[in-house]
Image (cartoon, rainbow, N blue to C red; front, side, top):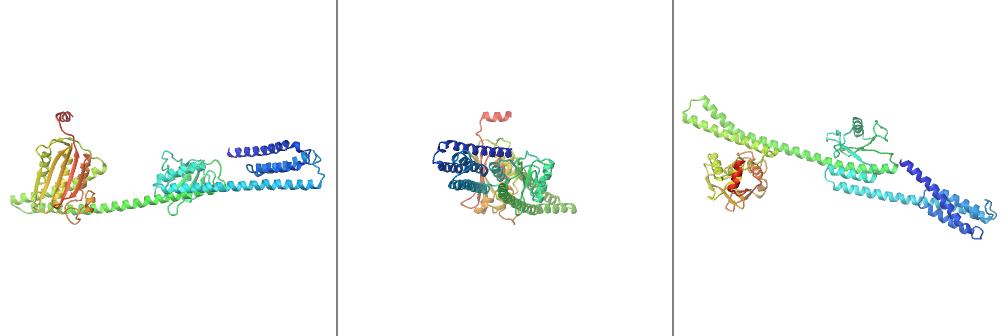
Amino acid sequence: MELNRNKKQKINHFLLAALITGGTALLCAPLANTQNYHVVSFILLFVVSILATFMGTGPVLLASTLSAIFWNFFFIPPHYTFHIEKTEDILIFGLFFIIALVNGVLTTRVRKQEKLVRDREKRTNALFQLTKELSKASGINEVLKVAINEIRNHFHIDSLFILQDGENTLRNSGRLQKEKQLTPEEYNAAKWAFKNARKAGALSPHPMGIDFTIYPLQGNRVSPGVVIVKLENEFTTDQQSYWDTFLVQISNALEREFLGEMAQRVRFLDESDRLYKTLFNSISHELRIPVATIMGASDSMLNSSNSSVMQSALSNEIFTASLRLNRLIENLLNISRLESGHISARLDWYDMNDLVNKVADDLKNELKSFTLKIDVPEEMPLVKIDFGLMEQVLYNLLINSTQYAPPASDILLSISYSSQTMLIEVSDNGPGFSEKEISLVFKKFFRVNENKTGGLGLGLSIAKGFVEAHSGTISIENRDEGGAKFSIRIPTEEPDIKNLQETGNE
């Protein structure tokens, strides 16, 4: 279709050149029988020059030839013959013909050079814009969006990018256009082009029975994949060079993002490996003590006849060690639930005194060496919370205080309510935290003293997750008098009879 349109346009130019030249000669007819017939030659030369500015070489040569013929036949005496009597007229006619031809050809070449320079400038600007947009793109998907849009704007074709999976294996669909699946023939051609770094498909030496043309995207260290387009005609030499430069820019941008993703994947694997080692070391370290306690106490009970008092003491040691093991397992399960997003607060109305008393009773052995001071005002209203989650929050905060506060010191637990917000504060007289530690204290597996026993470094991370499940916040600060203070703020509506009845009906 493109060839037919160009052919038709060329024919129209030939016809137009003939009509304009003939029309000019007709308009100059009044000068035929005068001594000013030489002026006609200048007019015809001017017309040829004008035609050369917007027509090709062929139509200009036709106009030059017709101008010479018309001037000779109609204007040079004797009229209506090709015979020329005067020697000077013969010379002028020869010069006219040569000048008309040279003028037309040179003007056409100048115009072609101008068009070539304009096209090169346009392509250079397009490549600059492509490079600029690709440099701003962040991530493979953004690079592909830029590439698809720029190819459509400058080549007027749609493109499909098929990328590899990171292990030098092509995918079967586009990274962005996932709905576009390749047929087995197209996929085999794409794999061949990717593996051999050569063009395949239609309009290539390796057609492979498909209607699309497949170009490999080659990088210096990583080949990102291939691009698939449907072309009606082969590119010209200039277009092919332009297209190849386009693909080089796109391939470099994709390679850059591929290497970035690979580096990120390596960092993720290193981080996972580090976390795995930390978790493994922490678990083995924390499990060793209660397991050794249980094994030792059990062996003593099995291999000796101890008094009932000793049997009770050994049983108590086993029970205490079992509680510690259970706490470790609970923390691991809770952090897993938090990461999977399966934690959701089941809110109901509760008395905070019941919650505080329950946690204090569960931790009576751990708190024996400390003085737990509880401050819950008598006018403290019922609050809407998830009792189990908040029990675990207080449990972890108090356990944290017992691990770092000096023996015989005070641990303060205060609860208040104001403006539909409950405030819980847990304070101790421990060493507190440095500025760096404060920013890391709620991260998984973070412990202030790695060599000290006392958990996996998950307790505060779990507390933060459970508080956020209540749409609340938890923060930490160092006390002026020494030690640390944890502050929890949880929004909860003010109870009234109507709310309590509605909750009861539910």
